[in-house]
Length: 366
Image (cartoon, rainbow, N blue to C red):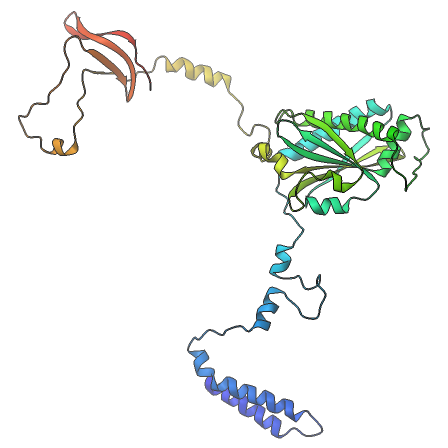
């Protein structure tokens, strides 16, 4: 390997000497000198010595770039640490719960608005809570609700299109006309009350959707218009966001349901199931047959007159002809065992020509 590097260095020296016509001879000399230095250190490299990275190479490996803006330089470990993406943990049963919620909301909102309402689930994603609050388009209404049994909170966001559509429908707006949107003003008390009534309908459906999995009561807590006042988790906490679309003929809007992972933690094991119960159904015929056959099963029974506890050293000292002392008398209780389980206690006696034990009571189980 050293010979090859010597030949390459000599070739670069020849190229530098023959450089004519205005070429950069200094650069060729520097390059030849670098190759010559590599040839001199070839033996050490061939010996297996590890090359130490300099600071520039370390920064390049970690993704730190000089001269660029802060955002474009986050491509290494810093980008991993500061990443706003959250891997979505698949919760199969939660998706089934949301499917039930969509079907139930379609029926309940039709009864609530006396209009043709279609509810559809757009997607389910995972997001950090702080990033979600910053991405909410204003104006909007944010509802904070509490899951009573889980002792934690969730968030429902209703965009302005759905707010004005609900208000228009509940106040008798004519069909075939789009709801009027007056942006740039705070929501009135009437609008807030009407939206709160719709939220209570949605929360009742959400509680009913979770009932087959775990009984929980979703209670309305408060209604906010400023995302800063709807903070229910730390900004870095992960949450599951479900986006629903509600259409009422030519009117409608979006409703977003956000549940932090901390809220779902009490039922996480249930949500990880592939199907409800995740166990096979019961076979009553086989159960009855097994229970019948158990009554005819023969098991060995032992009658223990007395027991002596001795150390291993004493047992090793046993010799032929030694006697073991027992303290049982004819009136001592006899313990009847099945395996290692004490079943009954009784009194020893005789019946006919056989030694028998009369059962007196059940044995006490520790």
